[in-house]
Image 1 (cartoon, rainbow, N blue to C red):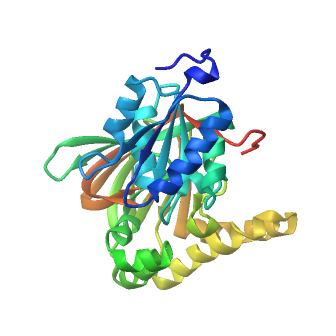
Image 2: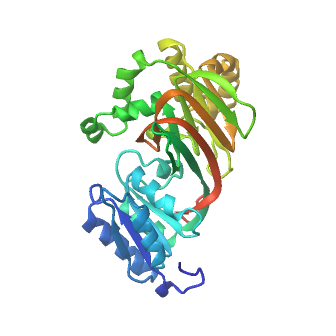
Image 3: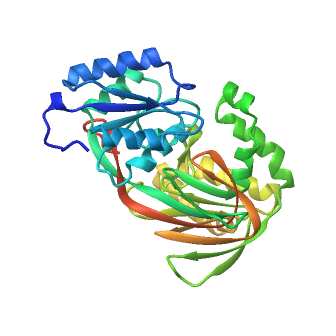
Length: 333
């Protein structure tokens, strides 16, 4: 690993890129220009593969002394690189591609400007953020560990992602999830869970989905959990328990109208308080450094918008400020 006191000419970056989602020639021009401008050495390049989403090549980059690792791809690539960079003290820089770009959105990083993303990788500043760590028990009783950067979901949310049509997603991006929701919500069946927050006694609930967030902004700039902070060491949890279609509409109103519009003004915040009790019956929000969930049967689960299969139980914790992300100089986010 490169020592922080090295002169610029002795530093080099590594790029871990998804060859399906990036224009490599275009990306090379931007990164090479930014490296030259910063006076850094030659950049290392590592493609992801079907057998390595980015974890192993990121470890190679660390062994070869990379001072920053640039993840160029979608949410899956960013998550894979972050998994290997966690606790390394080497910064993650992001060139977001694809449809979601969830971490980039939450950190207000540029989404469509490759030159600016590359410039930030070399000339930006470092910010430490939390990482969600999840341990799941699968159907065969095995235990798997994963990380996530934005949100993990169990239940209908994950089922919608698993049933999103790939061709439609390529055409309309995140709106393809809406199509999946329209097809699945009318026949969604609630399920029972037992859950414990921070080691407290277990509680029972009858739910449609549980979302565990490291930060709260979703595609379409939807403020799902507006109080979530990315560096507070706390998970923000939404337990959705809607009563029929009317209940789903109330949740939609809360997320799109109250969180997105009314919270911006004092009058709007007073209006929210008048409807809090009814909203809480449909969507309960909780906060804790960790949560343990045991499921009745099994349910789909997802991480940062990627389907991950079915599980029987999950334990999720916030790993406080364990990942360094490169952000624009002067950023207040």
